[in-house]
Each structure stands twice: as structure tokens, then as C-alpha cells.
Length: 454
Image (cartoon, rainbow, N blue to C red; front, side, top):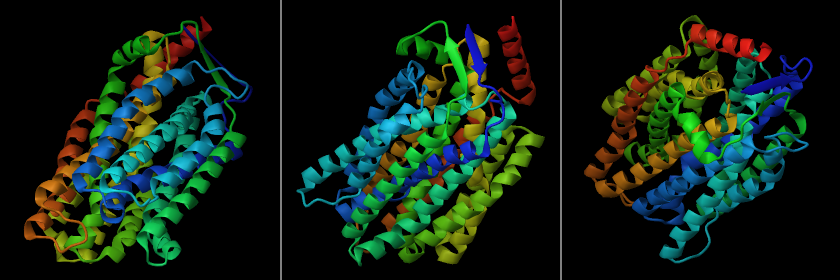
């Protein structure tokens, strides 16, 4: 049996706390999305790692996440401290995460073999530290308020800050590399990595200082990882949501990784990469209120699938017409951005519903393990994207920093568009099976409240 209690007036989250909590997502997305957008490109075209080897770095680092994410979830579920269950990890993880971000974009003068091992070690360090900080950070949402609408508001504010962090990663990174490196990309990435590391660490500490856990859930039963996984296995909505988001993350991250190669080699417009990213994400940010309304009038899963369907249509048009010029591709990026907004909004508005489902079904909420596993698959989508892109580029005959063959150019275009489309369609099918709608969620929370009063 799970017992929940809240601090006085805990239903409404103060504005300052909403902002303080949400600013942490700016830092998290600045770090996470910089690796999503540019790390593969940095490894192959700046640091000098072969594409297939660079792709394997993403895969091996995320296999490590298969251990650390559920483990971190279990640790957080059983943490008791004067700062709460989740906040301590923001305090003690901020500096290590900042250092890991800085190390990731350095280019030490090493042999080709040692460059590979440096890249693998640096990325595994980053993967570990962002798990220690961001998994508890995300799992904290249900501990801020019991009110479902207020959680949606908190999530919405956090998503806006997260998109702002993604915009900074997308639009500011290459200009900063040029400015801080004086034309030397290795020096520019190194300096930008240090700057981003400082920002990420400071914003994480701001979140720690301004947030309080105000709703406390105490399970009368404790369980290890094996028992927690059994609880997860009984949560069908969680499994469907996680599988669908995993497919979407692979598709979206393949697109994000290959943007750099498509503009550099297919369009000969490398200088327009930040413009393309900004058009994509600015449109996504402004489209969020639209999909909030659609979600309220229909359902969360309908809004999510509509958004991803728009992205699929845009990528198909880019495959057919994108090479006609940068303006055409950027225009279609605006269309894709409309749908992309749901990839930020919908997963994080749907995952709390699965926490309530867990408590309703088993009597145990287990936010930590649920968010830990969900965050693992959210991140491993990035790893699979990097691995698939690296493998595909190697198969097409891609060679960094030279004029590409016709076969390599066709391969880049196909990997940029057709491959993401296949994963996005698979995700749409899975999300379509998600069973929790507003009516079902109301029944679940009503029964939970009745049990608590009994």
C-alpha cells in the first residue's frame, strides 16, 4: 500500500519554484542536445574518429546506461535525506556533470586508437553524470504537487525552458565554435564545451536551491531492482509509451545528427546549419500551445501522433525536393517543427499518468524506477541514432572533409529522411495503443484517493 501526504498548500506550486525547477531543464537540454546535434559530427570531422567507430561509441555508452539508469532509479526511490529523495543528486552531481560536458569536446593529440578510447571514456562519463542528475530531476515532478493540472503546468513551463536549451544548443554552438576558436574548430569546440559545462553546473545548482519536494510518498514495502522490474512489467501503458518514445527518439535523433552532413555535403551550405536548427526549434516552441489545446480537446496520444505524422510528411518532402536548395529544406524544417513540438510535450505529460497507473495496479508508485527506465530509453534513442548513422555512412563510402561520391550523397539523403520516417511510423503505431485517456485517468486517481481515505 502506498501512502501519500503533502505539505500545506502543496497543490499549487509557487511561480518561483516553477521557474527554478524549469531552469534546470535549460541546462540539461543544452548538454544533452549538443551531444545529439554535434557530437557525431565532432567525432568524425573534427576529432578524427572513423564513422563506424564513432557510431559504436554511442552504442557502448548507452549499453552502460542500461545498468546505470534503472540502478539510479532504484537508488532514488530508496533515498532519504534532509533534502528529500531527489534533490541531493542535483547538489552533488552538478559539478561532475559540468566537468564531463567540458571533457567531452576536447581534442587531445592522440593516436587514432587512443582517440577512440578517449571518446568512449568521455562519453561514458557524460552518460553516467547526466543520469545521476537528470533522472532524479525528472522524477521529482510528481513530488511537487498532487494536482494533475498543476503538474501539467509545471511540465509545460519546464518544456519551454528545455526547448530554450535546445535552441541554444542548435543555434549558438557552431557560432561559438567559430568565435572562440578563431577559425580552429578543435579549439572552438574545446572552449565551447568548457563554457557549456559551467552553465550546466550553475543552472543545476539553481534548481537545487529553489525547489522543495512537497509531496511525500512512503511505500510500506521496499524492493530491489528485480522486484521493481516486476512492478514495471505489470504497467502496460508505461511499456507502450516507452517503446513508442524509443522509436521516435531514434528517428528524430537520426535526423538531427545527419542535418550537419546533409547541409555540408549535399547542399554545400554548412554555414546555414544553425539557421536550419533554429527554424526547426523556434517553430516547435511556438507550436506547443496549439498541441496543448489539441491534447485537451482530444487526447494526449492523438496530439502526439498528429505531431509525429506531420514530421513524417515533412521528411518525405525533403527526400523528394530538399536538394533543390537550402531554402526548400529550411522551409520544410518549419513544417517539421510544428510536429516536433509534441516530442517535447507529449512524453513528459503522459509519463506521470503511468505513475498513477502503477499505484492503482500494484499499490506502489515507483517514480524512480519508472522514470529511470523511461529516461534510459529516451537517451538510448540518441545512441542508436549515432550507431546507425555511423554504420550507414561507412556503408555509403563517406569520407570526412572531401567531395562525396554520388552514392555517398544519396546515402546521406536517405539516412537523413527515409530511415527516420520508418522509426517514426513505428512509434506512431505503438503510441496509438496507449490506453490511458482523461476519463480513465480520472477513474484511476479517484480510486487511489478512495484507498487513501479508507
